[in-house]
Length: 344
Image (cartoon, rainbow, N blue to C red; front, side, top):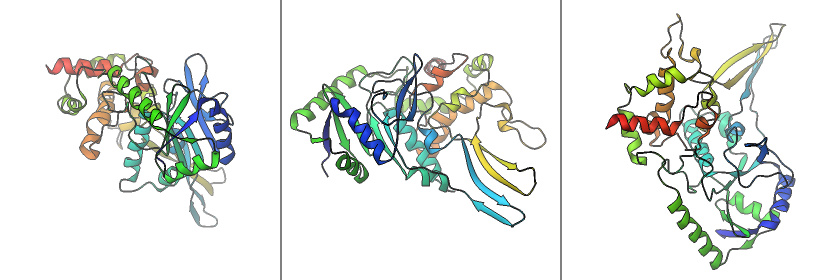
């Protein structure tokens, strides 16, 4: 398997068109002045190669906002599992979102395995796209160590001069290269250009907060009583935007929808949020995280402490979506810096 090939930029439109003929293809598309969204495309005409993180991450294809799990019919005494999935190709996934998908894979592969998620994951091909520079001021991908490609894709595109350098990572990716028929084998000068670009990129990308990657976990280990949570409590409006747009938040609720005949119905799961007041409420009305500051603290610990204890990996990818979409202007980088300052 050839490891690297190149695609001329002038052939990108045709490449997307040929992908769409193979199977459903989604890619980042501009929506409004500053927003982008992953949507189905049939050509490269509307595909955004340079874009800030999309409103919702590609998580929405792996874990849909609403999903039917089971159907039942009491009259027939049947209760059938439902598995909803669609084969597709996702083009243009940034390294921060590749990291998010890797986190979801770990969580849903853990016992008890989520068969619905895994069945869907195995039918999605991923084509990554490198950020040669910062998306915007909200990004913190360097300190999270997600600014460089680190697997999780079938193909990976890096824009260089008048061509894309493409890394082939799987047999499925190699199959796409052969089926589309637009690629040439990379030569030594192409590889030198990639190496030079990444050397310059390493100079531009610096830790975006006042702590290093390895210092984040110890910082959050001793942050439970930090005053910053009281500050966030006074600002947070519990809208749940931060968790809805996060590439690694995977909390959901299960609901039964019963038809009017009281005989048939479906069981569905829907995205839920730890920022919603009823989320931690149990029988008897007791709420273990009633205060907004407690819920904000829980959200941060779910990114920087708990998953590191369990999976040895941060579940913040540095995409900046939570800060970008927060109605109260709560900024993740500012919170981390405030924690670091208080720990001195």
